[in-house]
Image 1: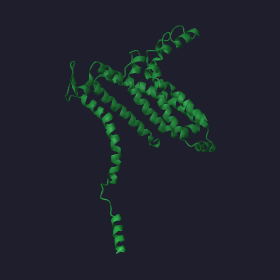
Image 2 (image 1 turned 135 degrees about the vertical axis):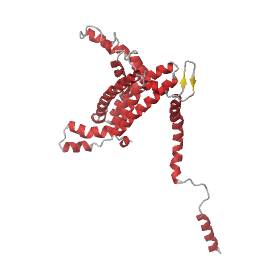
Image 3 (image 1 turned 180 degrees about the vertical axis):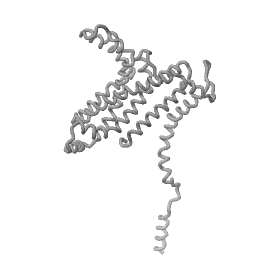
Image 4 (image 1 turned 60 degrees about the vertical axis):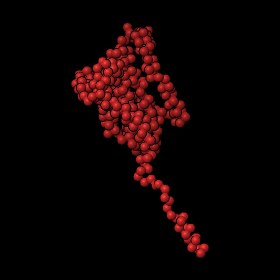
Length: 303
């Protein structure tokens, strides 16, 4: 009897529980649900609302829900819009090239010429010190430097290098590009520095043992391995420049235009559907540029 009772007890303990079991394929979806809800509410929903408003009608009195394509035809059919897009793309290309050049060499110096990790971190933090202040403050700080009676012109005149102040230093495309390079270079330095720090130093020794010169090591080893960081930095810089309006407005003195500045002016005139249509077109252009960057460089190596 004792043997039978013990065997029954073992069978009872071996019976599977009757609680609710989540299928294995659904676990990943449940884990991703909170992030999907947050992104959906704060990212996808605003974009969807912009897309909806871009088809509405409007006048000086208000907005009227409708489904009109006039906002897009007015936007894409205007030569002013195309000229503004070309001007914005010009700023983007120049700023991207300069930030990539400066950012790569700064990151290269920090990664390979500074031996001590503590010194690397200190110098990297020094690069981030200006970012502890507002973008507007850092941008406006160029005005007393580049102005007609500013530091640069005064110094050059006192040295006898120029007879009169240089007018194009401020309130020009040069000032816009200079301010943007100052504002966005760190966004290129950080991902490139992170990528360079992951490179195995034994690859350099192997290349030198094979007879490669310093420039050959740079071109055939460092730059190919740094491409993921360059791509991430390029995405940051491109998206920031395309969406910047305050720098263009202040540093050009209202003499240059950008798509973001055009949208800002439309919103100030309560032309929200027209601004929404411009925002949708700008979003598509930026996504195409990002897709082109991802097509060239596989940033999954960086993740």
